Amino acid sequence: MSRWPETWSCEEIRLHVEPYLDGELPAATMTRMRSHLGGCPECAAQVHLANEIQNELHALPEFDIPAPVLQRILDQTIRAKEPLPTRVGIWDRWPRPTWAALAAAALALALGLGVINQPTPSSGPEPPDSAALAQATAEARYALAKTGLLTRKAGRVLHDKTLRDQIVMPTSRGLSQALGSTAAQESGVSSEGVDDV
Amino acid sequence: MTGFEEVVSQQQRKVYSFARYYLGSPEEAEDVTQEVFLKLWSNWRKIDLTSVRPWLLRVTRNACFDRLRQRRSSSRVFLPESDPEMVESSPTQESGPETLAQRAAFRRHVTQALEKLGEPYRSVLILREIQGLRYRDISEALGMPLNTVRVNIHRGRLQLREELAGRYDSVSMA
Image (cartoon, rainbow over all chains, first blue to last red; front, top):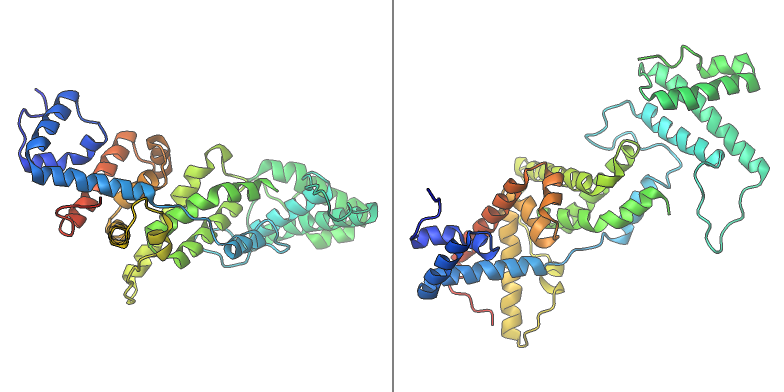
């Protein structure tokens, strides 16, 4: 049994104006509607109104975000020298120092090790010399070691096995060798400092 | 430009425009957009970048919905005003101040009627009729089956028409 009746009341016609405009009714139904609309000014006016509404919606523009807002976004993210602020919003489910420190430390290490390629503008500052690079690397490694301490103190575990096994643990061992066991103790990073899940 | 900046550059227009039409307020749309991209930043390592736009639109819609709930629960009365940029930005081909004034008024009434729509109609109409997303993209962004997207778009437009029918019993836009 077809769900599309042979004859529709004006009320039923008006409920199907939108799919009619989109051509989504069966062909026979489309024909019957056209036939009805040809002889019913009220229903035809509804179709006209629906068409005008759709045209108006299609003509509405999209907008670019104002430049100052874009700058604020970038300043708080990719350009931030500090970890993310402590109160950001409803998605702040983890102790802020842990995840913010992880993100900052990973970024600092990647920059220090030259993993992230810096953009090469046609004119810009000279690449850092070896002394500056060594300092940045040391700072990044210290930040990672500190991350281990913060993680342990916050009672969290590093669920990311890759981050733990390939970056944090090797870095902490390297730091302890470079700086001596005292510094490693102070940083609190050890094989027990990053707990297994 | 880093990957994150590239995503922000490519997607900010869709995110901000959605929020602006949803909330009817450029200022609140700016706040939501900032919130959304900060959330993207904090989830950057976990996001599947091949579907970042649906993710962003879903987060934007949820943030806008939360804002509306806060509005309703607060004692402040929020009166959505016509956004001058929305009303004036799209040029019309017809000449004559009467026609331009009529079109501007119609546009204002359409956008006000849009802001009165409930969910999911408001979201699907913004995504489809204003931003031109495909049914499949809307389905992914809102977590809605394809056919449900189509039905909701039709119902949303029907509600707009019913809202405006009293004011525009016979339309003369020529």
